[in-house]
Length: 272
Ligand code: PAF
Image (cartoon, rainbow, N blue to C red; front, side):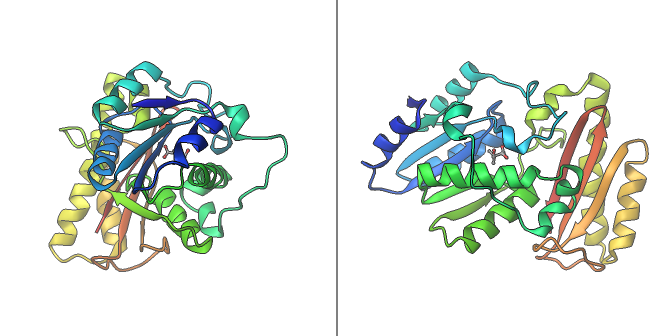
């Protein structure tokens, strides 16, 4: 695996690649969720790029930009182990200039995650577009855990006619059900235990729906019951376009939950 630190190095390498390119953009602190994305990219492409860039424009003032876990050496080993061909690790100063063409995410990016973190998705789309311009992937891999991010990236690719396939990948969980996240390291032992109620609430929702309950209100009520001891920020049930719905429609529904543990927000969801 070759490490590319500058944009010039990346462009030099990219111009000589003729086969299919799989791309996994990340902010580092790689865990099993990322590993499954890189492995999938490996099986489906001739060449695999991973990027690690803690993107400042998607953090709001007061968020965990400075404290965001950085584990460069461990991350490099993981990428090697997953047989990535190139690891791109640019500096902030090379990715952003003083004056920038800004990306304005659509209105739907100001609900749910975008409401809690206004302008977060503007920053995500801005950096993903830059990375796409550099890597020019055939296929780009994103986890379903960040469901709203995934949907907005799909929309950007469609609206801007980018010739890139966006590949949604399943959520990877710990053996007890907690969705893998780089932010899980912030949890105390007690919070880690309590956090299990998040996935439990999603399983009980799925169970209820399996028994033919299709009322969104009833499903949400059950989830709030399961998580009654948690600081739940929202439970929302939307269709694949992220419109709120009243009735569950199998094949076109996402159940989203966010709960807070001190300063840490944990997201989880299931796609029905
Ligand atoms: O999901 C992430 O890790 C980030 O939002 C992404 C897509 C790498 C953009 O910085």
